[in-house]
Structures are given as C-alpha cells and as structure tokens.
Length: 430
Image 1 (cartoon, rainbow, N blue to C red):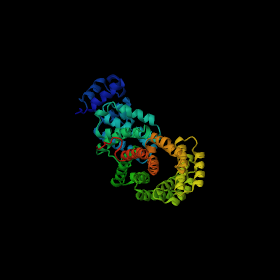
Image 2 (tube, helix red, strand yellow; image 1 turned 180 degrees about the vertical axis):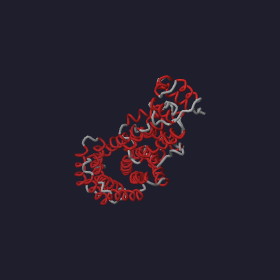
Image 3 (cartoon, helix red, strand yellow; image 1 turned 60 degrees about the horizontal axis):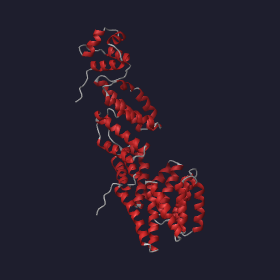
Image 4 (tube, rainbow, N blue to C red; image 1 turned 90 degrees about the vertical axis):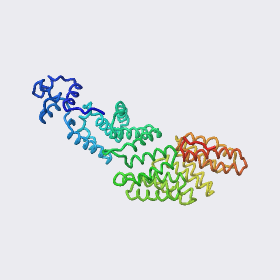
C-alpha cells in the first residue's frame, strides 16, 4: 500500500520538484530555514497563514495538501465533470483552470490523472482530439498504479478515442467493457457508455448486440442524460431493428423520431426521419408509401446531394418493384447527376439499372462481379446492401437453373448473416 505523506513531506517534495532550497522558502515566508526544516520533518506545526504563504511561494495556490482540502477539491473536480455532461464547456474550462494546481503535486497521481482526463473530455468536445490524445497517452505512464476512479476516466477517454477518432471499434469496446467494471462512489458508467457500446456493435455489423445495449441504456437510466440521448438512441435502435428484420418495432421508433423532429422544428432531423421511414416501408411492400416519404425527404435534405442520391436510388428500387421502368430510369439519371464523385453511390445507381435488365447475362454479371464485391469492400456499411443483391441474384440463378452460381451467392449471404449475429470471431459447427 502506498505510504500516506505528511504535510511536511508533501511540502518538501514540491519544493525539491521546483528546485528551491529551504533557505529560498524561508526567506519568502519570513521565517528561518531551521524552522522550514522542522515543518518538513513534522516537528513543527504550520499555521493556516504560513501554509498559504508556502503555497504562494511554491506556485500551488488552491492545491489540496490537507485532507479537508482534498475532500473539497474532489467535489469541485467532479462538479467540473458534470458541467461537461451538461454541455457547459466554458464553465467546465473555468472550473478546471481554478483546479490546475494539482499538476504541481507529484504525490497526487490519482487526482492529477482525473484532472487530465476531465480536461481531455473538454478537448474532445471542443474538437481538439490531438491535444486530448496527448493527455491520454501521458497518463499511461502511471495508469497501472491508479485508483478505480482514475482508471474509469482513463478507459472512458481511451474508448472514445478509438471509437470517434480512430474508428477501431473492437479496441473501443475493450476499453468500454473495462468502464462497465470500474465503478466507485465518485464515478459510475451511464447511458452514454451503453449507447456508445451499442454504436460500436452497429459499426461492427452486429445489430443484435447493438440492440441489447441500446435497450439497456433506456431501461437502466433515467433523467437528463437519457432524455438528451433518447431521440438518438431511438433512431439507432430503430435502424438496428430494421437490419434484423423487426420492421414493426423499427417503424414505430422512426415515427416517434419524426414526431420529435417536428416538435422541435428541425428540418434536417425531419428529413432524416422521413428517409428512415421510406427505407423501412420498402421491405413491407408499402411501395407507394416509400415514394411519398422519399419525395418529402428530398425536399428537407435538398442541400445534401449524396443523401439525396441515395434516396433516389431507394426510389428507383421501388419503381422496379412497381415495374415502372421508364420512370425508374429517369430517377436513376437524376441520382447519378447528384452522385458524381461518390463511387459507391454511382455503383448502386448503375446496379439499379442492371436490375431492370437482370435477364441479360451482362447485367447479372455486373451485379456479381462489380456490385457485390464493391459493397463488401466498403466494410460493414455496405454489407446490408449486399444481402439485398445476394437475395435477388440467388433467386435469379435458381430460376435460370444455374445451381452452382446460386449456391456461391448463398454462401456469401449466409456468412454475412452469421457475422451479423456472432461477429467475425464465430466458430463453425461441423
């Protein structure tokens, strides 16, 4: 166990760290160097006035050296952290600046780590990820000896770094799972942690696991933190339900997100909600509803050309199902005009063109050799679209009695579905 330092030992450590002699300090606080020596050895008491004079000389005014000071300091530190949770960044920055003397106390490693991790949170929110990462990396030197609260803050920041900045969702999950294990009286995990774990699983193409954590966030937590996240959780949850085929739940949540967006009169959110409803109604066979919602979403999202291109692509697929091929071709051309510069959009729109002429071997070959490989190469974001094309192409090859080709496409579809459930580290049962 780490030895608790006396007040005198703390003063001596800071003095030596600063490069001052006992004589320097004695002169500054108007006493003898012999008396300074007695204070540092614990042989003489230090009055409140003298302690403040020592702090001023050492440049650590506001630093907690005594137990009551440490208690007050901790409460102020966690108050600054709560300001970040409430998005009061400027207040948090001011509060943290008032507590910065902790950086000069070499014996307060835990509080120093917590301080730097709270500062990293502010930097992340301010968009300065590089500076935040520097603080996180600097903490690694002493993190093995840190207490629970400091470890919690470190792993939370490290998880966010991998999630939001490096897009390494597996490493992010490793840190967030440690956060779930590290609870203390001072700091606990919250809905944001569970929501981010769900988002990691969504990004890893595992919607079933994502649903579990989104639902847990809504079930276990209440109050302001969840209220602020509620709409976002519902949208992500609805998307996950749609990907797993639970269209009824997805539609209900998307309708709620549309109502919320309208209540706050946020045009972009309204457009996204309409777009989501359009996407979820297609698999239900409500084709005219898809077209209605798509046309409405295009109005709200008109300034986002790539999103509009994808909306037109979805509309084209519906027009194919309605066998309105001439109208479909016009929609595809509109989409291509918007999709210039976006390879995936262009390939999807061209693929829709080939769905019209699928009986032509060149069209089937395009989907098999261009569309499916490209979407797989896009990573997890393209795999949901791959399933659609695999299903269409497998049915086409079965109809043509091209059994080997149908089986090859079925294997791709099966492996993608297994990955959705188990992730990439699943074991085949023989």
